[in-house]
Image (cartoon, rainbow, N blue to C red; front, side):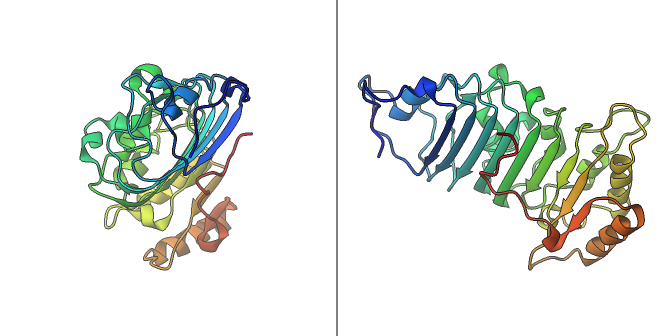
Length: 276
């Protein structure tokens, strides 16, 4: 339980890093949520981590809480969420999230909000998606499937994309990561891709398209496309892509690419930071 800060406490505006794990707040004197009252003072915060139980960060204010200097955010959300409190983070560069379900269909109408509850945290009017360079999302389940490619259109400057969400990597997404007719592909600046085997959409991703994507990214020929540095393909006990694993190892040996398969790679933890 966290009470509203006393007058002699360290001012919240002094904080540059903040980590909150399973905290419940009492209301402030003006009746507002204690958390929101404190968060509105985090004007110099750069790094934010929150591990939140079910229904602890539902929308309490229609006006987004502005965190003007936050660059890196890590969230771990438990349970199903309705309307999550909106945070405006115009300088955000890295976003890590782990949540148990991806199932609220109302967020699937707008591709910008397809990563419920990732993107619904960022109101369109006060978020600058072009600043985001690292996007990591992990979920235990997803229903129904959503258009991941359309959602990623909002992040043209991604350097790292890590998706540990069942069945979101479709043939369409893989194809859109390849330049066509000299046009830039989706997320042209990617240097690191992390797609676990569980993220592949069953009977949809074609191996030849996957190979084409890897060649196009490890050996880019189109101006404006960065060279892929690392591709990771973790597997689990339910791995069904044995041919894919063998094929990736062959590509690695043949081309001397940094392709990591199976136990050679681990999906980043929800609070693992890239930037400090």
